Length: 477
Image (cartoon, rainbow, N blue to C red; front, side, top):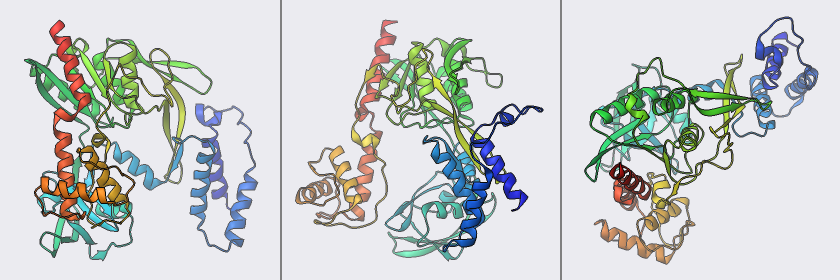
């Protein structure tokens, strides 16, 4: 039995069980007794390696053991991440990524360009929506996963990627050469709106990443300089992110030394999180005084709920929309010797009134249901379907048609006569060739109409309520 493997299993068990030796790093203290013997683990390892009819690499067995340890906890937020998965997770919250700057989807085995980002390498190289990726650097990609294709497209900054694409509009293959570059990832967008002769700021936060607080400062400075008398904070669909980003944003709108949340450890001990003045970012003090409204929905989770829970309990903002997701735990990532990480729930977080919202969510002050189109993932579809077919793409089209006001009873993916009639009417309205089929032209038009619907603020019932509320508040003041 190799010493290196014994050492690895010791480290894994000590990390997973949170043994005191690793928590305080002190010397001279007794190590806690492990829950099992290392011999049993090593015994299983040896048996599988030597006697199993299906060959398995040793590192794959270790990966499996690590995942098993995390799974036994029974917590969906405690997990093991391989070195590759850990890097991808960090990248998802980073301020920039290296790549070509194009959204890609997989549709019926084809890898399709959804849209290149403006001024990105993909945009400059001439990629268009609906371009199908055929080859990467001379190698075909059929049969690969979307994750695998994305990994191959990403790479080191300054390197060149050669792509062979098929462009349906021109019915031909094209060779494209793209130089990978850093793609900025913005998490905050802002807009100055005029509401009944009053200027109101709108800020959308898509996730709480590394630089979200800095982006928040830029947005709020611009809005206040433009004369905003109130601000709407939109965290609908925001899955969370870094707690420190929430802390800085909360600190910008709350008075100093205000407790905006509590952390509770495994023993039940509470530690207050206090809104303190940021040392690195200077926020406008006017933010602490102007009216706020926060928009949330069932997709608002974790760090988003820390913010909404604080603003609600402290009566600093009215919460509008629907009840949030309900994730009341905080995870820490602990590096392992194999390059992977253990992502472990180590604390609960509580609102300023010491409420644990886990599994419940943050309740809104003004409940407003939204059109189903706002919760739909608008995607590309390239296949053709006719009456009598059954497919998830058909279900997707039925939901969109219904959201746009067309008479469709089914949304189970079965292409019935009523669906065909709705399609024929839609195609006439969209001014595309009249047919009862779902084809590429139909899906392009359907996607475009759904996006137009969502961009029209008259259809956003939750935003309209927020605007009306602030208009009333500003008029009263």
